[in-house]
Image 1: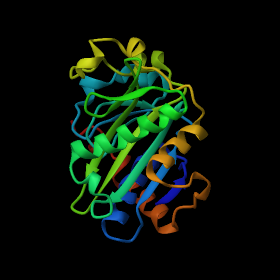
Image 2: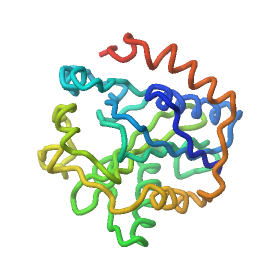
Image 3: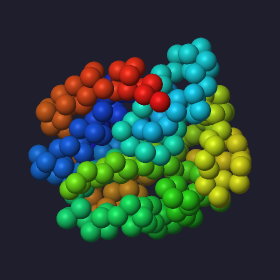
Image 4: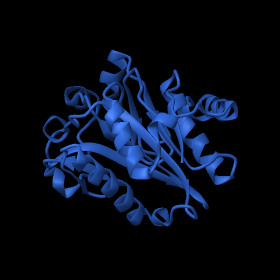
Length: 242
């Protein structure tokens, strides 16, 4: 398992890098990889099929200069930025049979992270379809994009969440997991009581990887991410497709 600890300068480049990573693993140009990144600036990210007007307070984002972007995976609208440590796991199904189906993969990844968190005194559980929760409050949202031979699973593990900012920029979602019980962002979201470095260690331990063995991405991967960012992720037609 290759480990990357690498954040690109622009928000759209970080989203594009995950698609580039999936493509590399899918076609055999890259090994199974887990990548960590954390944006230094806030931005809103829509799921691939979400309607912008239903999910985002566009006026508030515009007033504060918060970009609105769209990722290539499904799932809900989220606020990225400082306090949200992201991990992206790009793997081939043949190497990880637990990843072959969506349900099985979520159980494997989120259940595994929860078990390692327990070693640090954090009692998390896999909640809803794709969340981790502590004490009934969400500490991680996750989504996937799947190809024929590989998938990328990405999640945000919150260590310094800003629920007030979420409430300012994100509308309350119409579709909610039952365990949310119609709670607002402020009432529903919580942070893990762990440092980013500790959280990286948790994810790596679950995968049998070594966080100290992180390597730089290949130049071709960075170039592909920048191409995708320029041609797709910055394109208003992609961002405002719905």
